[in-house]
Image (cartoon, rainbow, N blue to C red; front, side):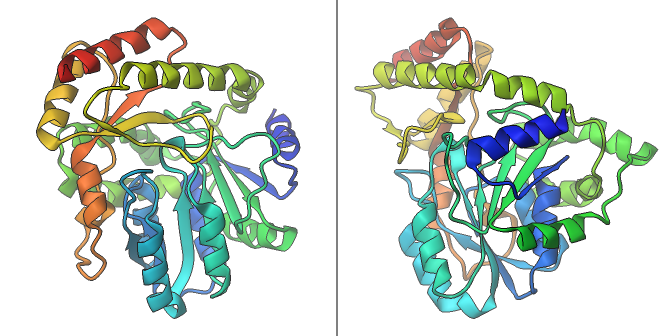
Length: 349
């Protein structure tokens, strides 16, 4: 079944240089190991925390790019300023399609090409259209928990050419293939502990959390359900349609509300429907939705909050962290979407 998943993506993205693996962060680790080491890896300051701890584990420093509050993606002006200043010290740039919204990836790759800096296109939260061809050196896709293809585990890397693919394969070939008892216990407890820290806003504990769980990244465990992934891919058009319908319900419901909806560059299916409001209203609204057992989140905290790195300030990412509300768009039953929309609309009315 793993071969069927691979063939599906060869046909979807017209590229045969594909590696399927148990975790996206294992592939990210392999990419970094395959490159000449310099001082920095460039990351969006608004991003999942896992990549930050991978680069720290390998001895890199993060160079954070601030967030554009209208799009939720990297701020291009801040990006160009920091790359121009530090280009000789940069090993790699990671550019993510946060929230399922397309990032300005073409502009990022074009700018980095002036300095011969390789780029990862991080599509963990996104699903580009059929026929999409990445312009980056590396393209990552996730089948992990909550992603558009939501199967708990599994990730994919597409490289620009066969030699690049082989360089990464050479690195990840050393990753072990079985969970021992200790790692199995870590795997069971990982998600529970992770969400406890987030729900309690104990962000300061996450550094130690990732040190504890990092060994999981270095295991290509065999429990990835490639059959489940393939079945979801066969149903992908329906999954995408549901996300678009739910997005349209929110758009219509929130048209006159005093919120700033994070807009997308293109009509890709959203991972989350996100908007900004002031911090006091944000926390009250989230509490109200959760009291009604409705899904909502306020991720992600600015990565700059987790390390002492004051010379790479990212004030807009901090503002995003304090104001963002994320709503689910994967409901098959639109009645749930309307319940969420009704609570939000009544709160701001």
